[in-house]
Every structure is written in structure tokens, then in C-alpha cells.
Amino acid sequence: AGKDIFGGTGAWTKNTGVMILTAAQVVPTTDTVISFVVQNAASDKTASTPKAASSASCPIAAADLSSKVLAATTAKGWTSAGIAESTKVKNVDNTLTASFQPNLAQKAADTITIAGLTGTQTEDSASLAVGGANAAKFGSTGAWTQNTGTMVLTVKTGNTLSDSAATVVTFVLKNKATKQPAVAATITAGGANSIPAKTMTGTVLSATKYPGDELNSGQIAAIV
Image (tube, rainbow, N blue to C red; front, side):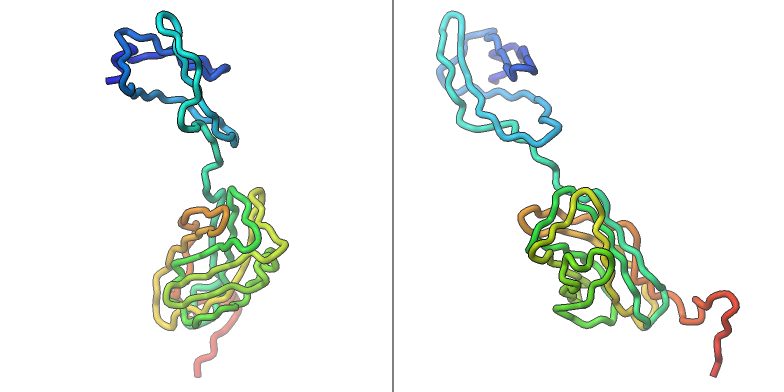
């Protein structure tokens, strides 16, 4: 194995990025393969082209290796992502509030997909109304698919979703007419800075109550 040729260790200098391997036996003229681990930079960094050279009895001038290495980019993810509902009553409109913050800014034409919102009575709509503090970033509408429980929000021209603050939107779905346990939603970003799915905190669409169950103190339900 290549590591045995160099005694299984090397001398690493962080400041100059130099790894010195001292041969413990003859280095063959065929390919020698070794590996070692270093930690990537904490901030974004472009890839570097390493060089290899030999000294001592058989000096060989430095030459570029075939591949660039040590590129460091921000791991794609969600700083926060949560969803909440306004009511648990069956067969009524339920306002969902979604709050999310990507760790990579989302630009015009990028999409935010909230999925898993199944069991509603809201039919498919290419332009379901969107409200909330940041509705305008998506043109105040989203594309809703009932069967999969999917809401797709598309960032409109001239807008950006910040990676330093949460984006908050609301939309209304009608709860199921019969009892349903709460469901969990996932969120995904698509586009140039795509971000993989994450399960949002909170569960919603829990159609578990009758209208009279949510009467405020002092209210009286009429029985007819």
C-alpha cells in the first residue's frame, strides 16, 4: 500500500499547506496512491491546484497535480423552518402560517415548496392567495395541489429571500370534514441555490374538533 512506502505518516504545515512524505522504502515508478485528512476552511474558498515535487537523491521539479482540491462552500440548509395553524375545527377554513429562513439567499424564479399538507378540502389552484408579511415576494399567490398537499411559491422578479431573516407567509386551506390527525410538512428550495427537504417544526391540519369546542369564554352555542 502507498502509505507503507512513507511509514504511514507525513509532516503537515498548515500555514503553507505543505505535506512532506519521507520515503521509508523505494518509491516505485508505477502510480502510488495515498490519502490523508485535512479540515476545510470555515468560510467559502475556491479550489486550489496542488503541486508535487521530489527532493534528495532523485529531485523532480514541482508539477501541478491533475485535480483541484479544498474548495469550501456553505452547506445548503435551513436556519429555521416552521408552520402553524389557526384552528383545529373540522370543515372550516384554516390559516396556515409558514416561517422559513434558508442559509443561502433565494433569487427570482427560485421556488419554495411546502409539501405534505394532505387531507384538505381545498381544490387545486394555480394561484392560491398568499398573505403575510412577505407575500409580495411571491406575487401574493402560490400553486396548490390538493392530492399531494403541495404549495409552491415562486420568487418574483426583483425580489430575493434573505438568508439573514425569516420569510413569513400565510395561506388558507379548508380542514377535512371528518376527523384527521395533524400532519407534518416539509420544505424544499429549488433553483440556482437549491436546498434539500427539511421537516418543518409544528404540525397542522389537525381536524379534531367540532365548532362548539372552540367557543370563547362567555359564548353560548345555539342548539336548533
